[in-house]
Image (cartoon, rainbow, N blue to C red; front, side):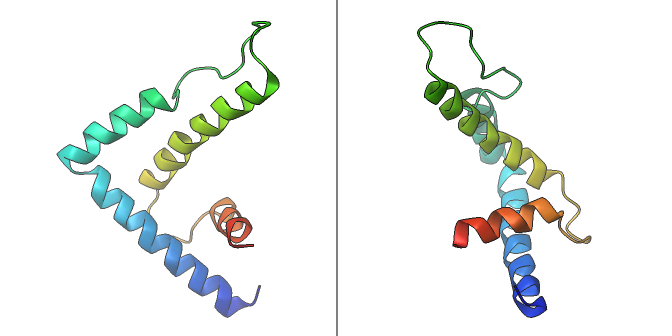
Length: 96
C-alpha cells in the first residue's frame, strides 16, 4: 500500500469513526448501543464447556462479541490523533 493509499484509508476510517461517535452520542444511539452490548455478549465469556456447543458456535459467539468491542474502541478514539494500526489493517483485509 502506498503512502497516498494509506492516507486515503485513514481519512475514510476517520469519517466512519466520526459518524459512529455522533450516532451513538444521541439518545437513540444509546438505546441501540445498549441493545447491541447485550446481543453481542459484551462482558460475557463466549467459551462453553457444554458438550452441546461446537467450536463453530463458540467462534460465532466470539464474532458477535468482537462487534461490540470494535464499536467501543471506535467510540473511545481521539480522532485528532492517528488511528491505531490494527484498525487500518482490518480495513485493508476487508477490501481484499
